[in-house]
Image (cartoon, rainbow, N blue to C red; front, side, top):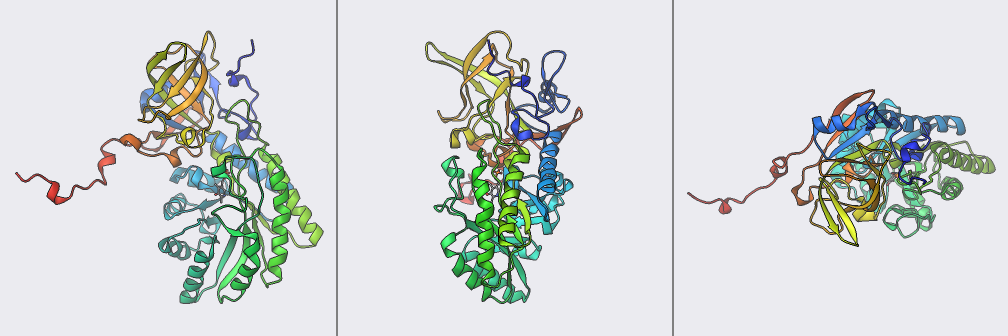
Length: 457
Ligand SMILES: *Cc1c(COP(=O)(O)O)cnc(C)c1O
């Protein structure tokens, strides 16, 4: 019988980690147990407790290298891959992507600070957001960070600041290219009905307005179609649309030298997912920009892309300990774990699917049962897996969920006052803490009891 969940037997794609379910260093040791980055998952949980986020350095670096290599291979002009830090923001991640020569995209002062602390050069950071605060804009300008203008409100404030300081500011403009793609409604951003960026129809007016400012220099365009995209066609169209906008901007005196095509490449969460490789994705975008530039006889702009998920998701796993079982005869068996929607809000938010295995039996040998894996939060919808095949398991066994490197820790909460798990980095048999585990006491740190509620003795 073909085993549906025996994904450890899949051939590993080292060049494009997003095409694997597991980190590329995943293996099974002599005792038949799961290892990642040369570390025994069971030993890590003994030492660091559960739930536990684990990131595999080799998978992370291979993902970065794949983008760099493909850009060098397919794009004849200058290029810069930029990591979309909202996928997983930490001083460690900033430091790692800086060491790979990447830039970084941030959308808040917190993400900007994290990037600077991690050593990302300011000239490689871009600042996004559809509602930047005055303080955030000032922080970015003070630190020489390029701002991506999302709307008129941004534009007005940047004009004011540049006039006040009497300095020229280079800006990029984000627009919605009007491209539909098949992904979840909440993470679709490229179609006309989106809260992000300027509409195509407004660009002429915008270019006119910018050309009348004293200090704003428009030198870049940005568009991001959406996230977890499996098709290549939307990006095939994007190159041509953006080059047409460059031509339009030229009529108003703007010399656009940078194109940022956003991110969005999907990853393989389950056996059914079949995303393109990083190489194919970069090739598609490069060729579409090259073709449009050649057709219009313009020099190749600097090409930037902004992958988030496809850099970090496959590198990450979450390990939970199994606690309670509840069998509802003839219906289902619930198995509850020691985390859930606070450390991974994607299933309850987007109905996302994942893959998982038992740490002590990754190949899922012997008898298999269907389980519903529930989190420990007070929501009936806090379910990580509706139906998953696992071998017989018991209270105390460990379950490893794959593909949790992106949009898990960065979207985590303290719902039910549950502390965030620790995060580890593994490489060559060594493990390092990259984020400490929170304690319940940490969660009280910002609570304040008004004086009149404190009992007088
Ligand atoms: C979210 C986002 C990205 C990254 O998207 P992924 O799907 O994680 O690659 C890139 N650019 C912008 C503007 C985004 O909002």
